[in-house]
Image (cartoon, helix red, strand yellow):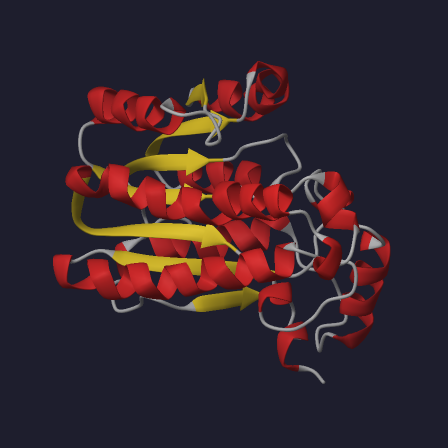
Length: 257
């Protein structure tokens, strides 16, 4: 144990999708590092590097660019991590994107190309990451991705990301079934609304935050640190008996009518 929490001493892994200091991935990186893990972190490109580096540089954590929409980029990222660290114990996938026009419109009006790209980047990239790391996982390794309540119920203004996140949660269950016999675990974390750069692209996100705060039993929004705590637990051996679940960190909002 370390600081009253599970220890990740000696564990190595990947965190994909760091945007800036206020992102969920930033809190995850800080928590995993504080608990003793070694990791390689990705940001989407050179433009994002200066913001992401404010998180990784003070910690001495390796940061690389990786655009999962560019053929070969994800393979390069994984290969570099394996070359530098060897076998991996965890992967945290925090990537979600959709074209603004499709994200802000009705699902019925979404373009074929926009819907396909959102699904590819936000959902299939998790399955692709799992395939690439599979030969390099230590026994008991854990794969974690980020979802949202809009996968389960219709959330106003969430648009095509609802069906995309529903597909992601289904992918988690199928990967858990396929990789479980090999000794690997797969999880989805579903945070309540948090004001991040990615969330700011959702129409009327302020309204979603207000609704969550008013209706959740805890009567408050959750923090990125609380999401990071759960993510770290799922990466640790203390959660060894868990797989295939979508676990909410939303103050209880998801079960309120």
